Length: 127
Image 1 (tube, helix red, strand yellow):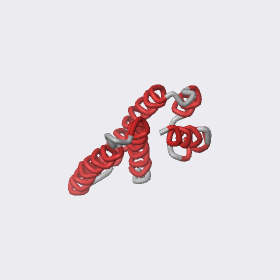
Image 2 (cartoon, one colour):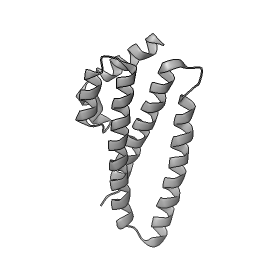
Image 3 (tube, one colour):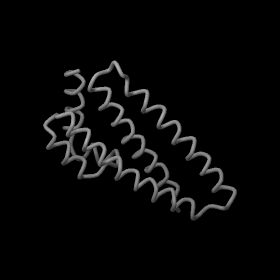
Image 4 (tube, helix red, strand yellow):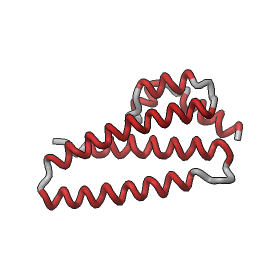
């Protein structure tokens, strides 16, 4: 468990450049820097960033939908619903009940990172 938290702390210490590359906010980097590896604080940072990334995702989704024909809107809607189901199932798997504290951190990171990746993907469809 301590090893997992250390690895996560080192990954987060990669700094703002790493977070920017992933599309994460400067607020997230600052929050993680100030967390001092405290699990509850890191989880709060991830939760706040997931909300920011979810807003980004919704904005990108709406922007793409606005430029599509009705048939393509249906395709994107179906794809988005399938992606949401996948994200939930995949990230829930990370929350291994026997995995200790790091499993909760991993599940939160999964949700945050997947949301950021999908937002970035949808932003790539904007014309």
